[in-house]
Image (cartoon, rainbow, N blue to C red; front, side, top):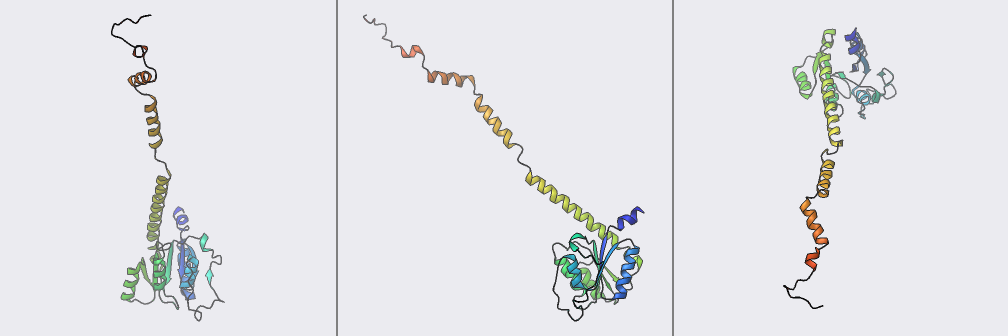
Length: 224
């Protein structure tokens, strides 16, 4: 029960232009207790992620028939923990989407998994070299999705460590030097507390002794 609740907090964005494959991957992800959003093109995936791209694919993805599920697509309020995308799609391929995500400073840490119905070794190697975490052959099975969670957890831990490091640096920059004010006070106290010999010399300079002001005539009496 607790494990299922923890996994349901993870949100997966599934990208596939095939309605059948999209429904299949959505059902498998929900069976694995993931939150799922599905889109039918790479450009809509980037739009959902907040990285809008105007693509020249009006013939294959006409703007009057958009498909985004669930219908509430306020990407700013939704954290995506993993993207799983088909490789062969019209317009922007899964490989192109992978590159866009990895080139973005705000999205590059999101794990990306590629799916394909064609087992082409050079294609698989290319995607893995570009930063894909996994390459699944269709039809995707439930056992394949069991390999998603370690990638999500690794990214979550890394993000948490980066956040803690950033907060530590901010705290360090905001705190004032602790020894500056006490040092000033110490110097002031040293100036106020001069040694007694210096005080005596100062008093002698301000008011000369009467013996020094009285003239002496070497024993000669002065007539009165």
